[in-house]
Amino acid sequence: QVQLVESGGGLVQAGGSLKLSCAASGRAFSSYAMGWFRRAPGKQREFVAAINDGSTTYYADSVKGRVTISRDNAKHTMYLQMNSLKPADTAVYYCAAAPPFSGSYSYAQAPTYASWGPGTQVTVSS
Image (cartoon, rainbow, N blue to C red; front, side, top):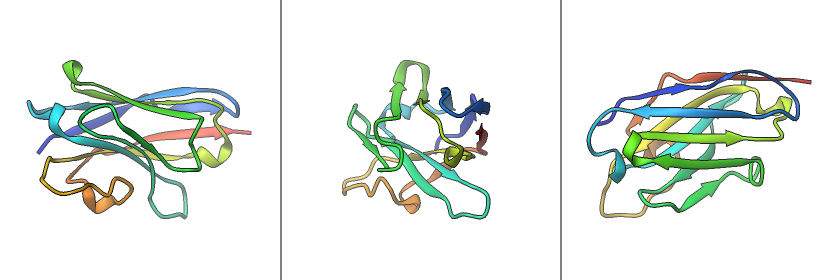
């Protein structure tokens, strides 16, 4: 399994931007599908975005058009560029890694992922 650490969270005004990073340990990073989830206060964890072991990306409807997920396998790092942020985006953001297997991933489902980072707080003020 890989170990994950998020960074880049902070306080930003509505309409602003943030870029989150997820640094991964382990030599097999390039073969993992990766995802971002978030948990807002008083709410359940929800899917934000995912990227497979290539460059295919998936987004939740709530962030589509405002968020871009990407990965740099050479740096063992995944990114989440967030633009046009809204107060509703306030949450703890978690990155997650899904090891390779022969079936089909359910990218939006948390049980798909075996490794999770501790999270980074994103606060959007109005």
